[in-house]
Image (tube, rainbow, N blue to C red; front, side, top):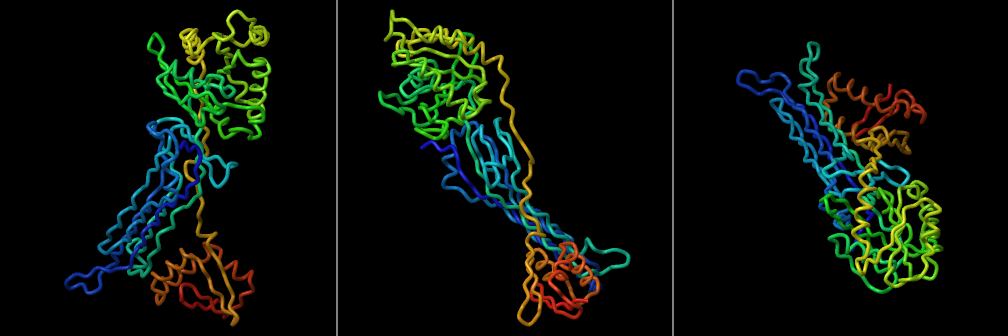
Length: 417
């Protein structure tokens, strides 16, 4: 099954915690501080891979987590960094954060990488806090949490030419004739239920790609038939080829309908360079061609072929190549390389008990309190500094805290002064 949209959740690794340790050497019962830093948490990347056809393998792999950093250790040793995660996606994807209104980037080149969530920084060990005044600090910081995100990944076929037409116009037959693709063909509506991609080679060994987009019907821009689920696949095509069945009841009305649906879907897509190709001339031999005058009045190139009988297909290949080679490649849209989605400040919750005690919940601050020697003045000063950093004192005052009230963090009780 062809899958062109998935939603995944990605989480970067947490940074390792710094540690409080002191040198233990012969004749030095309590040496200087030697606590090392924690390793950085792993990052999560998306990587474009031209070997992937669609997003189907992500359907069963929707949760991705990078490795956590390792805690620091004694002798000032830094913990190992967490393993990065690389998620392969097809070339041509658009990546959104949370909803379709927030485009992050587009990956339009093979091996192109996008950093989507960044791992937390490792915490500092007590060796990092030593100075001339504070020679034996009992302070270490916790590693930062990694970022998290919910991503919507949408695939839009990346091709040089997009075939646009009604069901049974002969698009799949044409693609099979002019390329090495083997799309399924049948005599019934909506034969093509997923986009097909073919590679065309000219007589001079130039190559370009053609995408067969599932057939459109009136109202496709509003979702009728196969609707805009597949209309989006023409957005990145450099040239559009409108294929019309000359044996149909009203070829001109069919062409007008296709133009209208594409224009309603996207004005930018409608204005792309285009050809009109009348197909099945073997079925209308000798009859007047109403499309010829209709198209020529609009200064749009028009060709006549029979895909089934391979009449005019070589000329079509040459004509398409002459147009494709002069049309610039689509440019990727991109915002930030890194999504900032998690901050310790937004993680803070303060509750007041029936007895008037304030309970502060902040996972980052709780880890700091748990690893800091609160019996030392340096340790207490460091904790208060972190509380101010996250605006906790300000929030406590807004909640009506008074001097002498008790504040609890990570099971440790403080007196507000």
